[in-house]
Length: 87
Image (cartoon, rainbow, N blue to C red; front, side):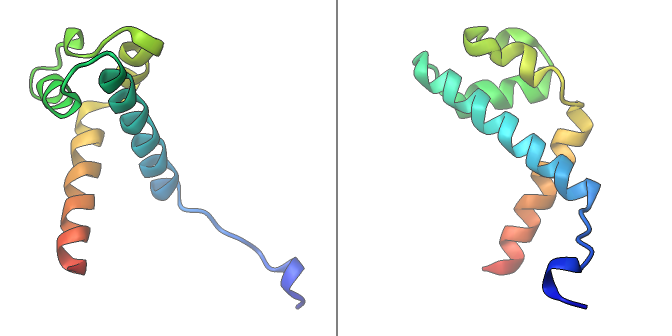
């Protein structure tokens, strides 16, 4: 079979992780642009699930609220463990 006819498969888990990563990066950027400490604000949001930790700037609050908190925490821990195993 030639290279251009191979089947490509995608993991929905990887796709979801990329979506989570993109959302967190976007929210982080919005918080930073508004002068907040993005790490503290995101951690506060995750711990309390209080959306007021996240600015409305660039719809960041609406965007992050689309994530399931358990799914977000799982992805963060999995990424942390993966990084620890690499180095």
